[in-house]
Image (cartoon, one colour):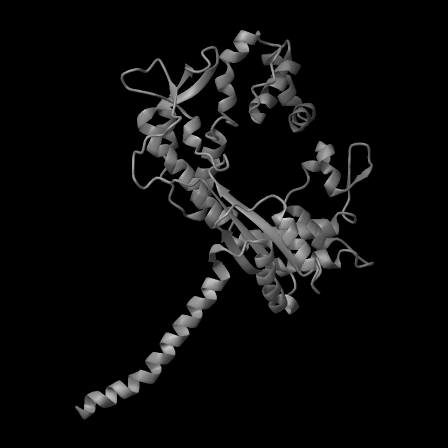
Length: 372
């Protein structure tokens, strides 16, 4: 939808498109959309079925659904690592130089992007960088707190901040996805518009308060974060919310969030879906169904789930922490590898006990030494 809107509203782009593709340009637009989706199952009438399969490798460039290794991921890794001051050990230029388009061994009539077998360890670095970015930035507890607060802002302002579509009809933000000319206006400036919008009836008062709280770093507090040994089953997050609502707490007091860290393919090792070729045979490629171990330091687990409980109301934070502990036991998520908040409190308590003990023992030791 956005591609159609970009072409129809940009006369120069439209003319260039028609100039390069005087015929079948509607089909070529479809082809571009399919490449962005990474959906190779949708045939393009521009090519015969055989030719379509010979072009399957093109669907692995922008959005690779086979193994999640694509230029989109490499681009935002390089951008975000630079912006965050992080070091990425994945060399995308070296990786691309080692790639080749080949007919796969298991489906001989379909092409794929294969990589030299010696690059296997470099690929592990790619996914290690991905998990590092998610832990330190995208899914960091503060990042998610701000995200939840901004989501609440948009929900509060949805009925009161309207945009006009091409027909002049007012459209809510939640309906903007159906109107490209409205959707392109939904940038970060929306929050400034909410703050500056005249609000005599004070319908946006809650939304403005939340935005100001973010700017002042008065964020939602993380009450608990647990990583159960067992997988968090479907419905357990909702059950946790229901149990908390059965107490004196309300929806305005808390939010429960499930966070999943993975390499992009759930619990599967994405390397098993990569095709490799060897130095001695660079015309055939093979999938690494059972990846060899280039190093003993490579991971065995490729997915980890975490459940977080945030407090939206500072007045009820102690009650929420108490009820969260009880609800985790009822849901069966109390058997945890770690509880971040609990560990922090235990660590602080231990350091205080140690410092108190040193303060008490210090003077007596000095007196004993002098007496000797």
